[in-house]
Picture 1 (tube, rainbow, N blue to C red):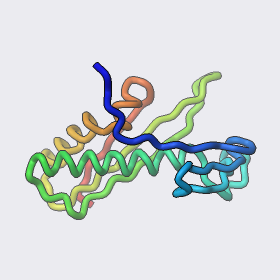
Picture 2: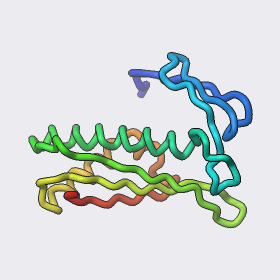
Picture 3: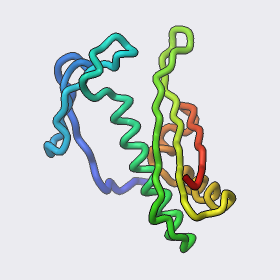
Length: 141
């Protein structure tokens, strides 16, 4: 089965990687990168974990809204936060993600079911499934 490409994003990193520069081909993102202070950097710019957190939060929120539409459920005031942690395990360095889903006005069971459906359908969740730890908390505030 061949997949149809719907969209392709393109970016380039120059300079020193975590202490360099990133730019997208369309110019929508053009930013200095800086390692976080916790890793000995200045913290005066973006870093890969920040970019991943922002992308995952937005992607998961879209999947959540899609699940809510399918369930005919109003999630107007919903939000999704993502915490991406860089972790060391011996000589290995990897990522872990915690998603914080806020669904005001829904009962806990309904909110958790929408988050589960979003996690099944979100392209970021699919991409990392089985590769990194992803935890999800659901609340109404």
